[in-house]
Image (cartoon, rainbow, N blue to C red; front, side):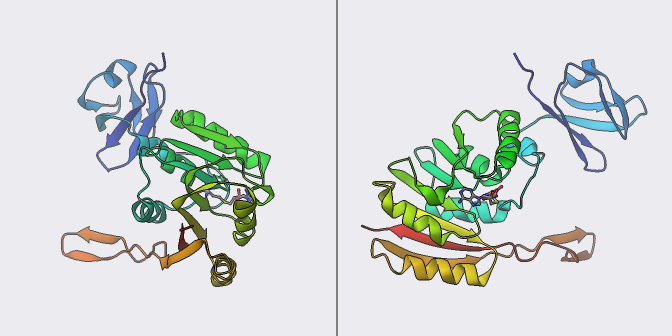
Length: 247
Ligand code: SAH
């Protein structure tokens, strides 16, 4: 059986993921013996640097996934989860998958996630990430969502692709894809994309547009009396359009 990964927290606050705790671990702060990785609490490297040994959580691995195209950030995923209320009984379709940031964040809390990705090279990266995270409730498909949807009775379709309005036809043409009361979320970086998506949705009476949100998260520096927003940080990521299927 695979040993559980370990997280080492250095004195400087830097963290290291130890994928194989049966082997000695090497990093910029020296070598840590495999026998010390079995301990709990404080350990030291051969150069005298101190580490705290922690069990690696989902998020420690998630943050270390390989990246291919632009991902949906955690702040935006948090809002999608909170606004749609998805959880342990939800079945979700995520398109496109890219390297899987949204797919796997949803999978961590949902019953099942199906991911559609048109590019085989991105799908390979996502499959490696899936294997690394060890999630068992994800099905990745090399599929173009604009050509149709195989799944039925979904609780949410999350759209993160350049022409999300084209997916609406596929949703309508493929029977019973979404439950009544379920959601479509469209994540898109530019205003014209939001406009085109909303004007498409408005043509279909079975969908109700709830809201369009841009979420700006400001991180702060907190050091003694130097308490202020960080000078350099992520600003705009994308707009989120929330839609509900009402009929
Ligand atoms: N949501 C992902 C990022 C997706 S990036 C994350 O959070 O990590 C957008 C992806 O959509 C790209 O990988 C692109 O190849 C894929 N894509 C574009 N058009 C598509 C389509 N019609 N069907 C499925 N995937 C598509």
